[in-house]
Image (cartoon, rainbow, N blue to C red; front, top):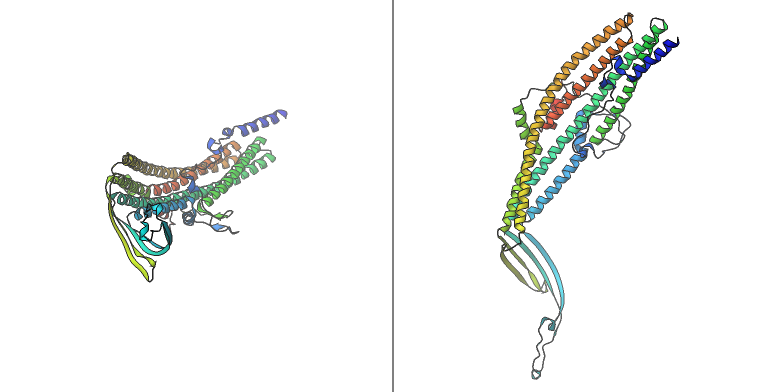
Amino acid sequence: MNKEKYAAIGLLSVALLSPKAFGQSQAAQAQYSPPPVTGDPSFQGSVPQGTASATPLALTLQDAIERGLKANLGLLTSEQSSNEVRAQRLRALAGLLPKVDGKLSMTEQQINLQALGFNVALPPNLGFQIPTIVRPYSYQTAQASATIPLFDFSALSTFRGSREETKAAMLSIKNARDLVVQAVGNAYLQIIADAARITAKRAEIEADTAVFNNATRRHDAGVAIAIDVLRAQVELKQRQQQLVSVTNQFEKDKLTLGRITGLPSGQDFTVADPSPSVPLEAVTLKEALAKAYEHRPDFQAARARVIAAQFTLRAAKAERYPTLTASGRYGDEGLRLLNNSHGVFTATGAIEFNIFDGGRIKADILQNNSELRNRRNEMENLRGQIDYEVRSSLLDLKSAADQVDVAGTNVQLANETLKQARDRFAAGVTNTVEIMQAQQSVADADENLISAQFQYNLGKVELARSLGLAEEGMRAYFAKRP
């Protein structure tokens, strides 16, 4: 009896320490963890909108995207950066427009002529002397002055460059919207995959519970050994532990989506599968690249920044050119403006040109030339990055589609194997090792199918982003089919 007890303990230790002995794969034992967050961390935050309600919010994918486009921190920051660029454009425009000022003044004045160098003494026989102090007097002035730039090629080039920077800023907002859509889509699809894993784990727990109850009844009837009961119980506890882990990850991923979309703190919500792996229409690599270069806002923004840098370099070179300005003032001046005054004016035309600046203009040219080279290099690097992203997205999408097909077939085969193993166990032909191996195969097949479907839907999001059509693509790729 003691030998049987020790043998049972030994086999139980093997079951606990070596899951492979019962056909459990390494993938099944590892705790699930979502893919790491990449990209700008600001797109993983938001400004919460509204207040939380006690009723769970039914959140569709489109609703989540719309909320993200209103509250995501990355997009809000990009919009404010665009306003700063617009301010720079207005400042550059001001350098080309006339500057007009008005002035109203009243002056009370007393003058010491000696301090001004007027110190003349008249002969005494004249009977009077010129006073050295001009007694206090007052006068009033109303005038307007203007400075008009007639020709300043450097300022004109600066303004043209600022227009391109404004265009780039607006395109950056469009790019930020695409990044928000991508972040929301990834987070939403992650929750869908988590929910599918929870459903699968619960089904596995029900199956393991049935095996455990069956093994217990057979043991009580004296037709099964105690180790069969222990194996079934160990398997059941492991499934329950995995369910706890997957459920915890599900709740954490819901928090992540809430942070991205700006949901009120503590707001509960439900999600729905946006589409059951809807296949995409075939698109060739040439067509995809053409769409990407045409629609990617970050690429268009990079091109605008190159043009802006060209204008800035032109402005630096134009600092050597002469500038032509006109200025003047016109007003009314006198003791009293209403009844003792007269019009006064001044008109000036000037040409200013550089004679010697100690190398400042040359330094500006060198600096802006380097800036232009950097902008061109960044644009070409982005061109290569877009090519890589489009090719990678198409490859991942095709691979994921093939994996979905294979994983679906494997689920059917694993379920058939499990059915036969249960029949053999019920007939007393085999023990719980075979049935647990079959159940583990079903669990692995379910996980592979869930992962493949998640990767396929994720591939659709990545393709939409790589083509520069994230908002349009999400509506098309995840539209409800009748």
